[in-house]
Length: 108
Image (cartoon, rainbow, N blue to C red; front, side, top):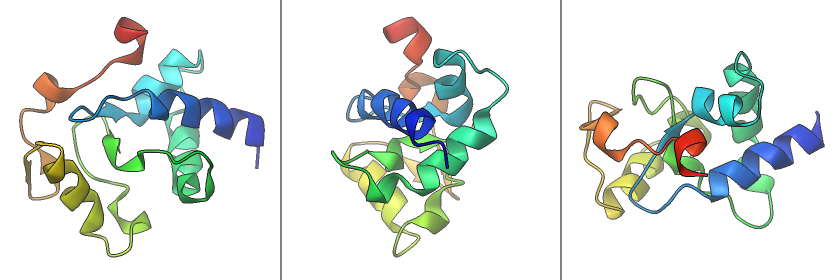
């Protein structure tokens, strides 16, 4: 486990504003490793152990699918947290994904 890479992933994830989401690939691109979205996903699987807290519910796949939901307990928690922030989720996919997408390369 590359804790330095994981911490970099968590630093970007912590910047995602409430009510917005980003993707594993967008974080990878922001870190200069565009082909490493799977590694970002792997890091996010351990985000629950990070301190300070990481808003892991705001990180989804590139089409807005809640692929990380099985790392939440219960698996519906990811959707519940997003909905509390005003994001609509239908069939485990974010509706209006492009409108709520936060691109770290554009925003940072």
